[in-house]
Amino acid sequence: MEVTLTYEWDGKTVSKEARRIAERIKARGIPVDVEFVETAALLHDIGRCRTHGILHGIEGAKILKDYPDYARVCERHVGAGITKEEAVELGLPERDYIPGTIEEKIIAHADNTAGENKVEGIEKTLEDIGKKLGKTHPAIERIKKLDEEIKKLTD
Image (tube, rainbow, N blue to C red; front, side, top):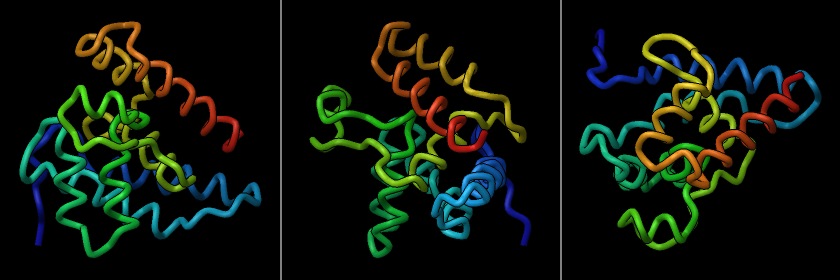
C-alpha cells in the first residue's frame, strides 16, 4: 500500500539520511544501533497525525508509549532538543527534551537537515527557527552544536 505524506517533511528522507549518518559513525568504530535509527527516524513525526505544532513530539510519544525508546525519539527530536525552561514557556510538560543517546542525536540532526524529499543542510532550519523564536534564541546554538558534533563523528 502506498502512503502519501501530507506534511512538509518526508519521514523517508529523514530515515535515509539518519541511516547514512549512523552507518558512517558505526564505520568509525563508534557503537550505534543503525536499525533502530532507521526505524525511529521513520516514526519520529508520527505525532503529526494529531498536530503539526510543537506538541507533535509529545503526541508521538503518547502514541508510542509502549515502545519507550521510540517514544523518547519523538519527544527529543525537535530542533536539537528543548530545555526544561523552554518546555515550560512552550506549554510542554516540564522536563528536558534534549537528545541524550547517539541515536537520538542522529535523528534530530537528520531531521534538521531534511527538506521536502531531499537533504538540504541545517541552514533552512536555522532560518526558520530564527524567524519563529528570534535569531539569538538558544535553540539556534544547540542546533549548530549538534551539527558540529555529528560532523566530527562522521569525518
